[in-house]
Amino acid sequence: MSPLDDVTIRVAQHLDLDHLAELAGSGDRAEVRVRAAGRGEEEMLVAVAADHVVGVVSVRWRGGCDTPHPWLYGLAVVASARRRGIGRALVRAGEAAGAARGAEAMSLDVDVDDEAAVSFYARLGYVIVRPHQHHWRAIDPRTGAVTGEGTASTWIMRRQLRSADRSGAG
Image (cartoon, rainbow, N blue to C red; front, side, top):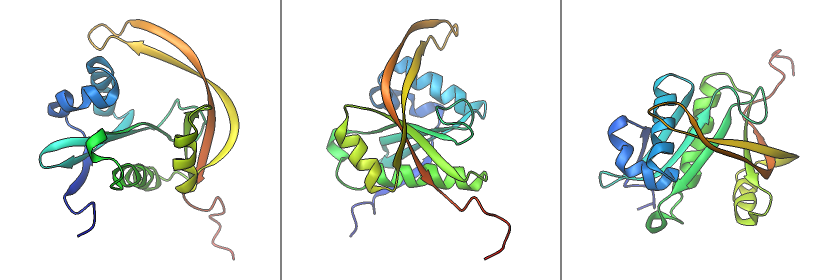
C-alpha cells in the first residue's frame, strides 16, 4: 500500500472552511481563498483522508509574483500527515491544473531563510530565478478591507511544465 492510497485530491469547497482555517493560518485567510476560487481567480485544492482535510494548495491565475505564470501558494499539510507525499501530490495537482489551462511554467515564492522549503521545491524541479520582495495583505472576508500588510524577502522559483516551443518542429 502506498502512502497516498487513502488520500484524495479535490477542489476545495465552502464546507471545508473549518478544516482549512488551521492550514491557511486563519479562518479569514481560508475564507478569502475559497471565495477567490469561487470567482475563478484561483483554484484551491485540498487533500482529504478519512473525511478530513489534511492538506491544501492554491493556484492563482493572475496577479502572482512571476507574471505571466500561474502562482502556486499556500501549500500546507497537517503535521500528523506529513512525510507521506501529500505536499508533493498537491504541488503536482496544482501544476496539472496550470497545464490544463495552457501554462508553460508554474511559479512560487518562498522565504529566503526557509531552506527546507527551498530544498523541497528544488527536489520537485523548481529553480530559483530571482530574489523578490513579496507584498502581502490580510483582507477581512466580510468587508474586503485590508486589515494588515507588509513585505517579506523571498525567492521566486519556477518549474517548466511544457516546452515554450509549440511550433511542432523538432
